[in-house]
Image 1 (cartoon, rainbow, N blue to C red):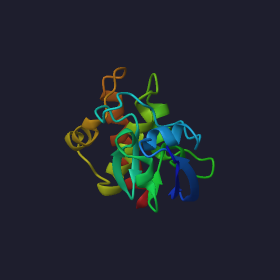
Image 2: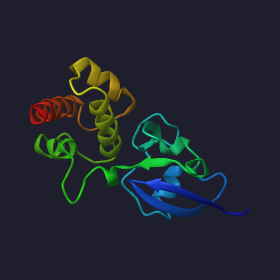
Image 3: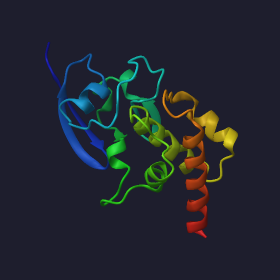
Length: 160
């Protein structure tokens, strides 16, 4: 089957790649694009480990065809840190041990960042609801939720 050429923007950089018509964005990211941060946990959009942004909207990259990225803006976990500096969420996850095996962590971080961009002062209930699409088998979620809430507080304080 013929390969398709896709021109897109990933983490602010223009990118071109070839893909098969049925190839998922997750496969393209982890394969020819070499961006292995997004993980495959389920392959059916149920776990959130492969969460990316597509034109600013959270999506499971295992459910998006790579060809659908044509002309669109993609954000991955690799684009979260800027200039060698971790995003405050990444720093707080490390400080609070809000990660263990790391399979879910990229998707959780992507979802948490999207939440804080939309709502800089979420309640615990809002954080738990927002992250409900990201399954974690290791942490029990409490440290994750606390890390998101503490990051939100620190970002609000820094903005004042």
